[in-house]
Amino acid sequence: MNSDFWKNKSVFLTGHTGFKGGWIAHWLTELRAGVHGYALAPPADSNFFTETKLQERIVSSTLGDICDLENLDKAIKLAKPDILIHMAAQPLVRESYNTPVDTFAANVLGTVSVLEAARQSGTIKAIVNITTDKCYENKEWLWPYRENDRLGGHDPYSASKACAEIAAAAYRNSFLAEAGIHLASVRAGNVIGGGDWATDRLIPDLLRAIDRGETLTIRSPNAVRPWQHVLEPLSGYLLLAERLYEDGEAFAAAWNFGPNHEDTKPVSWIVERLCAQIPTSKWQTDNAKQPHEAGLLKLDSSKAKAKLGWTPRWTLESALRKTVEWHQAWRNQEDMTAVTSSQIQAYSNV
Image 1: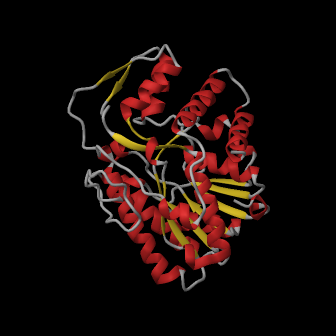
Image 2: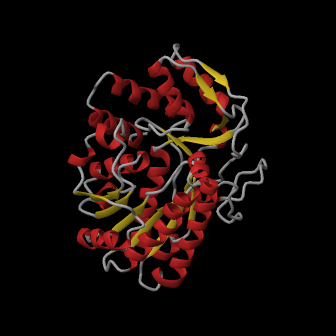
């Protein structure tokens, strides 16, 4: 990644008040880019955006719904961005069972609204559209999924992201390529890192239970996922955005960013490693009937390694350690802006 590339670039980022959106916004400010955020308000309780004082580092922050095309279009035209990174979404599988209509609206119609506003912007040259590793039709097989595997989704979240992929491809083929706007979709594994307080995610749930002195209940200890620190896929997104901006259509496609094979682990492995780091932690298995979630998921990132030169830098052990370090620093009321910058610098130096 060329840090000089980002200096004074105007970047429009949806979902900047979220976990992944907050980390990439922080990183972009370290790279001296001008970040214009558009998202719903951050949660009232603990959240990455507030704890790292991100409001003070970015150029502008517009609170709004990505399905509101008029408001979104106005914000993009005011920002005059060179690059758009679309992260805003309803990101949780279990929540999608409770709010399927809202999930499809945010993840499909919201993506369409972003792409429609982008093609009318007059300034955008590159778009990175973030979906998920769960957009593939999961056959519970042993082989990792590649970018040309079939899209699908058993649950509303996964299905909505597969739909978003199809919508993005339609916009690329019908409008964006002709307008000189280069669009790529990216699919990352299960990301972890400091500053994630979402419900129904393994590590936030465990850290929350530890903070409260409670026993964590695990739904699927044998479920296997491609775990990685949040900085891993974000480095891929930024590298890809550079290539889209400079080299264009050759990179306007789908890309996987997942961990090395040995870091695809079951839930129980993650919990045991974290409990070894934090002796006060306790967990148990929930045997109650649960909504369907995939039992086995792996990603093949050969394309990103071969064509982008991207590769994971931190092992899963390192990622877990960095996650705990960030959370403990937060509990100790340290300067979380500085802590976050320090972790980004450490990752960049590998």
